[in-house]
Picture 1 (cartoon, rainbow, N blue to C red):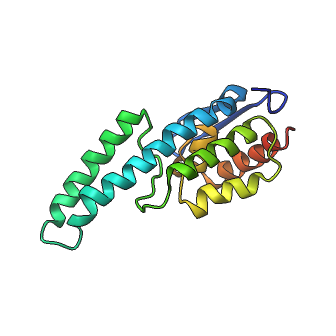
Picture 2 (cartoon, rainbow, N blue to C red; picture 1 turned 60 degrees about the vertical axis):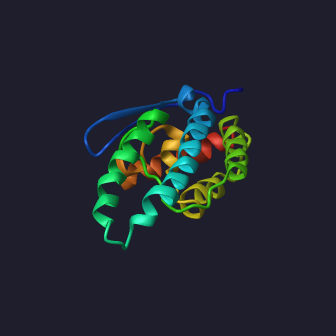
Length: 162
């Protein structure tokens, strides 16, 4: 993988005070991180549809609330993903989407994706995913709006090779 930009060395701080260092290695790891996260998203949608959704709006709704946290925590641990990461519960993200997204993320990490905003929008709005975690390894819900904007600016620079 070629270097997407010269030298990346950014620090963002979560709302809890945890520092995340964003470097070239962080960007280069994005396709692998994306694959693990997106695989887990697909598994979670299946788990939710099969085991949890049928319990909603039934006399067993208390069981839903008990199982949700346990099953979700187990999924995160099995996939080596951090607590606090954003996950959609709707089905809709497929293996085909996964392969296309990973390809686009690889292009981004290589500095060959000029339309970063479209990639970010697809991840965030179209699929309700956590783009800052996928691209930079930082769960979006832990960042201030300003740090989210900083990472988007950095993402544009990486995607354009600059």
